[in-house]
Image (tube, one colour):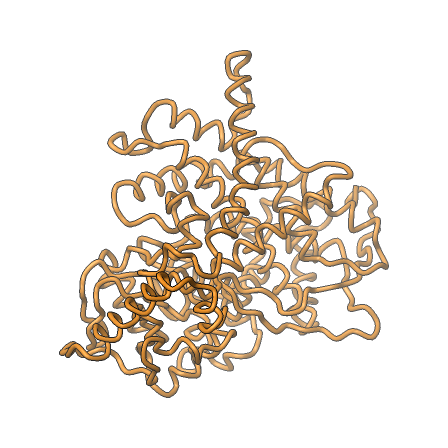
Length: 510
């Protein structure tokens, strides 16, 4: 984050006076004005800035450490914004179940508002009729099991391309996360509008898309003065909104191109394939969504496409990368996965085998326990002042649920830092969010809409990669499973591995 002194140096006298006046008001509001509310405990902070200047970049571990001092529910003053951090399953239940409706709203960051066309997507849209319409469109139509079954051939064909690519590079180092991302990108773009990145463009455009998605998620998680002091948001002092608008414009150009082409050809011939874009455009032209009282607009269409591109690629590829790294770190786990694949799959790789791969499913669950995709989930915000854990949570505060810490709680998990998939064999934990010791996709009304797609994608990719190839670390390098914090959790060091053909049947690789 830019230093405060640098910000002031770049302001003209009138703007500087506005900034000083705004900060003075915040000082009176939060430091001088009496407050009778019983707020949660938390670390002391500085005037104006609160705890901003003491935040650690690895926020998930930093907040976990603070919770050991101040308890399972604590407050942080981030400029003028009050943040509440939950690290207890019991208190998480109060938030996401007992007071689910109250906490079903979002505290939308400035970058998130720009990235999603003003918060017109599922993730940031406020709870209400519009959000319910978008949720129905996604869950009942776009991401239903029936729809996912209908596009299985797309996933299989793109997987075959990745397998052929890896086969050509047997014995040479490969950044497996990049290849998985590119394959996922092609799967999703095919599902959205029937077009994939092919030929020589495959690697170039794949790398460009990955960079765009990485930059977007980085901006979404970047500390921003506009979020901590909303009165200064119009100044965009760090240029975060300007930078995000540049990224969105690049995506928007692609969306506009696809929408324009689809509308031009519609009158010429009826499309035989029903992809997501066609489905959304049909709803938009009818003037209604799943709820006829709430129209689906072209802005909603583009926001949903943005959710698919950003939410369905980086998140799943990171999980697959973590899973492979953890299995390589514990060879006995990888061996058991391969034995199960040999017994269940044999030489006929099909997605229909996934329900029978109980140990591989446990590997995915254990990966998401140790490395949840969104370590603090997407922040919730109460629509009214509420009592949680015996403390007052003011309306409009920012609520972080530290699922990373909850998943490593020694009171709930035996040897919580150890990667042990067997803990999920014949166990009660699933992705429904009903058990607040384990909810990697969130819980309640705002639970992730793409769970079914994520589960199929991650398991199918892992099954193919583990069944067809052996993996080793390049000589002289060390295996690393450490994390880098962001709104989306990533490996600190990208996984570079050498594939070796595992099975003798050449038809499986082409």
